[in-house]
Length: 95
Image 1: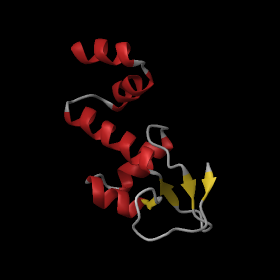
Image 2: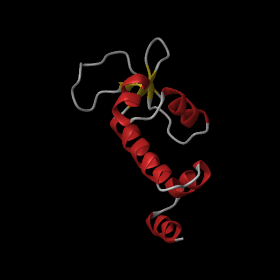
Image 3: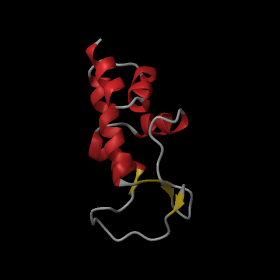
């Protein structure tokens, strides 16, 4: 985990707070906290005050989780999909 002490506004690549990620993705802050707690989507950094900060790769992973959830997969299945290699993901999706 990275401690991010400075941010540079809204430039691409900035770490986003949990509230901004929730707003951008339509996922509740509570769900984001749960995803962090179960290891599904963990923020890459924390602010000096301890706030979760999400990097672009974290947000992309979250977007993938959202797609799988909308397809009806359970959180456990989503975790398995994210852990699988490309062929494992295709096999799981075919079921």
